[in-house]
Image (cartoon, rainbow, N blue to C red; front, side):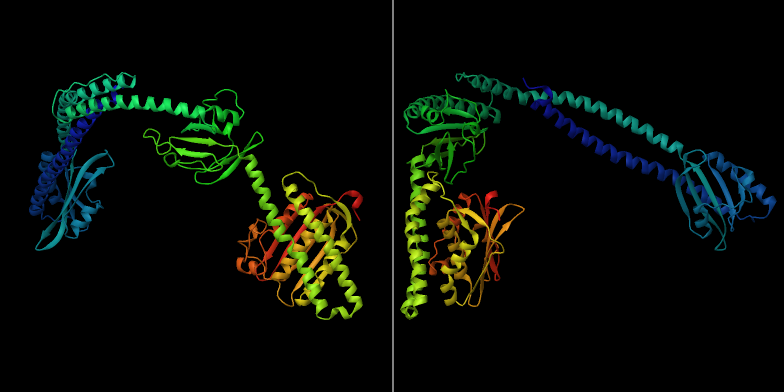
Length: 599
């Protein structure tokens, strides 16, 4: 039952009464304002006539004592008639006669009205007398003789009688307004009942329908808008009954399909609480029973934005994530949790979600292993082949005539051949390392040897490119690394520096021990073109290229730095890059050093 103050009938009554009250207040305000002006203006005119009469008959000199006594007897009838005080001043503003206190004779009046009157201007003002706190009318008029101002007459008249008359009329008006408002309220109740009565009948029938009784019919008593509402409501009842039957039939069909599906299905409401879950979903999520009412985040942690593919791990399994609309769900992709939007008038544009779960653990593992293997092989074989090509070209150009240089070249090529053979073998191990099936084979290596070997491998290339290659190892120390893979990291970084460093540039490689942090720090810096600041956070991402066109011309695939990061992370270290566009790039590698390896 709706409380009276929230009902339509009450609101109609309030609206009608407010309209009537507003109209009466508006009329009353206008009436009182007009009445106030009328009384005050009428009283002011009366006082003005008296003042004008006095000004015409007063022509006595201000310093004549006999005249002063005659003036007082002349002024007294005026004062008794209106209850006002009358003052007569000479042209200097001194009182020569008054109907009030005779001790004021000879004193100067400083009222602004008197001052204006002595200047020949009639002046009036309604103000509060400080002595009795009552409103009084101050009116002053000049006394002229032969066109010259000889003095002034001032009348101070009380306004109490005027305002008392106005107050009595206001009380009469307010009483009439209250009586009219009361009668209007009675009429408003009667009129509102004729409007809200049929609406209440429709409401009672709607409550019965909400309880499941669709056999209710609203009686139609008129052909107006209320009657049309009742007829429409009866039609709605009939259609709702048919829709309920169809919905129940579809629900049973859906239940049968969900129970036999191989993929898991979880449905939630607008509050993200589970309202439906099929047996397949319970098996995938390893649930006991049907956890209805539980928040989805307790079953599937994470956010799954519609329209974007992603994966989520749950109980050692990988579940694919994909979003699609329920009306467009024709065929399930190879992997995904599918989102379907329920459009509901009661719950808004998003009334709930449907999640279709599929176990894609094995597919994702195999796909990632394949991609990493192909990418790593195609990229990492390029560096040793480049070294071979450089030394072979040098020998073919005549370097073979110098046996010492030839022997040195052959030794380097022999080492690179062995390293390439090991690299091909270990690329397969790298993909297994990413999958967590293999560990890094570390060995104790001198940092100075690592840097010097790096310089030997790139000495000819840097010479041919007119690039100065500088190495620096302030003190000897040992590092525990997988030698081939760490060389692979350094080769990749130096190779990138050579690609993007112009002629007469400098590449610096340093290795030093950080005693405070117990770390080996390798720094490779160049004076190349640098990397824009917007690209710097992405340089270690797979397949990311800063200059795509030039990178392809140089043979880059965008995997080198990402492979380098994986290797350094597998060593328990860190790799970071800083760069200033147009000035160069610095790569910093930090590796932990055990106490027995400290210098």
